[in-house]
Amino acid sequence: MKKSTNSASQLLSLQNIVIAAVVWGVLSLLFFLLFSVPLPGEDLPGWYSVGTYFLEEIAFLFATLLCFRNWRSSQIVSGRNVWFLLGAGMLSYFIGNLFLMYWELVLGKSPEVSPGDFFFLLTYVFLGSGMFLAVASRRLNLMLGQYGIIAGIALLGVLIAYFTAIAVPEELDMGVVEPNAIEQVQSPDAAATNEALPPDAATAPAVEPTPAEDTAPEAEANVPGWAQAVENLLAPLAGIVGWLYILGDLVLLVMATALLLAFWGGRFSLSWRFIAAAAFCFYIADIWFNYATSYIEDYETGALPEVFWIFSGILVSVGAALEYDLSTRSRRNLRRRT
Image (tube, rainbow, N blue to C red):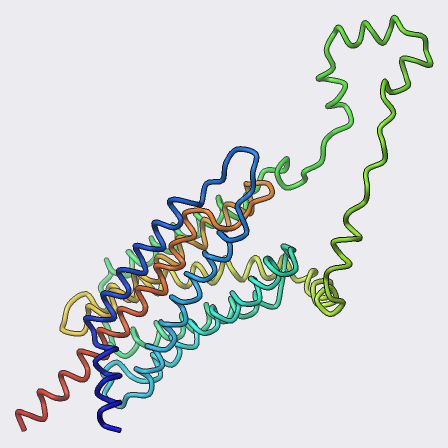
């Protein structure tokens, strides 16, 4: 039993975790760089979407396990509740991504709201609460300049949210072509030709178009009834969910800044700098996604900036491993001194 425990601890040593995190991050970046831009006139292949979900899910699953390892350890200096909340946040994102992957890859749909969105929103709640407990445990007395930094970052986050997700141009939001648009782009030659033709010929179309087959019912037929019912039930909540995402991003941005101010120096500050960096990476990916879905018509997931979600899970893994290593080493050194 002791041998298996020792082998597991050696496998999950700080050095091995850091090496695995670096390798996973490099592989993810190369995968996005090489395959995230499709050929002209083509969509992203299905195997690419599967690959992005795989890279993302493994990163967050590993972060979940390491955070819960810290929660189970009685030697963690920063508090077990902090790491339970961070692990719950990583797990919530992992589950939400499973729902999104099922809806997007299996059902072939992109609903405005899916069951995965509720788990994504729980991610903000758990991560924000965990980082708040970590900052509160330091019992900081921030200076006026530090409060100014936090306020400035919050204002910057509000401005970024406004220009990326709120202030959407009407022509992009409506997506409706005015009836006069076709008449305005009609060339003079075409207008003259219509005038030269008989009245019946000028008004009738040159070629009778064949009725296009309605493929929507066929696509809907492949969707299970319960999935369509859930999608219809959640559709009216799209506006509220969108605002909650904006609020969650703002909370993450402010708490990441507070983490950097709280753990700027000291022996145990390095692990929390990685957690703050993970929050910033999560925020960058979220802001890009808000911008893309607001300004890019028929946006297809898998663009290069979405790799920051993977970086977020990787950085949380490294931060959890650093915290575990520093906590266990400090207790061992304390025992030797006593």
